[in-house]
Image (cartoon, rainbow, N blue to C red; front, top):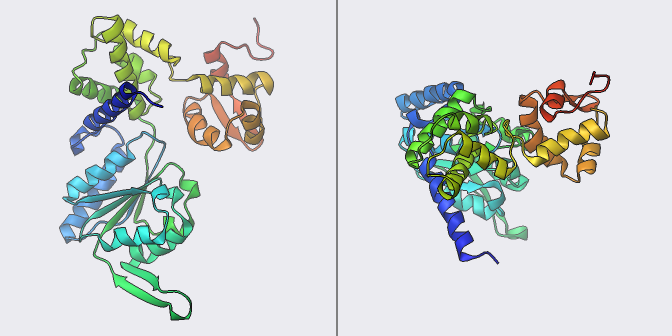
Length: 334
């Protein structure tokens, strides 16, 4: 059972995360191409006095998909109803939400790849022609009922675009894929967060935390909070270069943001499979890890760093991975 202190700390973290979430378009750093595309979509819809096209945001967890959805709603002056794929268990759940939508409202569905296929069937006509088709009654007495829906916009977010059905994906007016952030944008995010949390940062603290953030705002803010905690307990309250390094060391995160699981994956490929290639199924068995976790959580960032490569024969560790881990490659001079 969780202690009251643990629950209070988790609640505080959620409150802090909400405070750090950009509330204005100008406060959202990075993803410039996507923001430019959205600006055109928003301005055009406002110019026509219409609801926007339905939008699909794709990308790794923590890159800002939910934040973008709320910023789009704010720019449109629209209210947001929020749900998630796993929460939509029955057709009645989806029907209840759609029939209560107001004109111009935005429906945000997180984890859209986990929407039940039967519920998708309800969404198709709702998205295309603003119609809700329902079956009333059972057996011979059952009859079809069609309801008109007000103009609304569906914004969906997913970390697994490949799991979305083609019929659903094709009904979005724009598919926007969020990528990892560049170091300068992560630094800007950290500085803004430090100002909001009233954390004094000195020396190269921001640069160190940015490098270890996995190019992801959510991770960057988490590391900043943990560095603040360490500074308050073991320092003088401010986060300097030494404090940042100590906080990362305590979390077992290295200077490039690799966690123990990342290093274990690379070391397994190098030591057990001679650097690869090794099939992802074999790798998952060797690590006792779920294949989906490897493909969706570990691999994308490792490939971004140039540590890992996907080939037709399987996964291969690249020279940069050997160098980072301090492992000599076969045939390399000692």
